[in-house]
Length: 221
Image 1 (tube, helix red, strand yellow):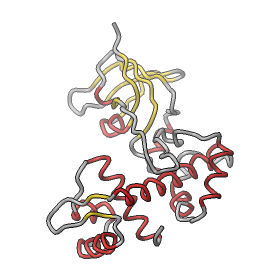
Image 2 (cartoon, helix red, strand yellow; image 1 turned 180 degrees about the vertical axis):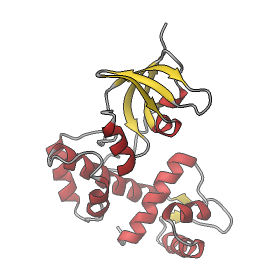
Image 3 (cartoon, one colour; image 1 turned 90 degrees about the vertical axis):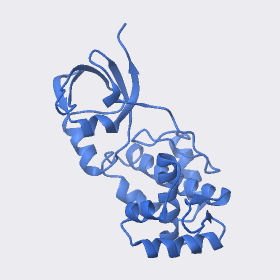
């Protein structure tokens, strides 16, 4: 494993490649809020370590070893988030920043023990899959709430936005994983949705929120 900075680059490439397929230096620099020459310099450094495949003006790609190392960083992050929620009583909006620090601990035994205490979980508190001990990840195919139609029932299983602001917003509506929502109406003007779920009737969710809520959509017969 490299420095925390190198690990952050690998993790960013891991996430961006899963979202977009190909990743450019420009996309990477924007994602990390750094200048392109800085990102280019780091890509050359990681290419020398055979963690990244880098050629000028071509998409970036993690090597097999780079993919494994990046997956292990994500594993440590998501295991930590789960441990903080399940064993230490943190709320799901409180764990990201702490996990950002813990993920750079270079002790496999530490995370193996954490995994054992949690019972080998497959998902983190936000419904995202936890990579296995080899860094491999099994991405689940989810629907977006925003793709639902009026009358659909939708089981909330994950969120694509795990920012503190968004999770606090969900908390304010008492929306948690496992909740089954019914789509009552869709506003043609801004695509906001009126939904109901146990204990809540006619809750209005913005289009941005609906696009970040993932799960399984079941159409009414």
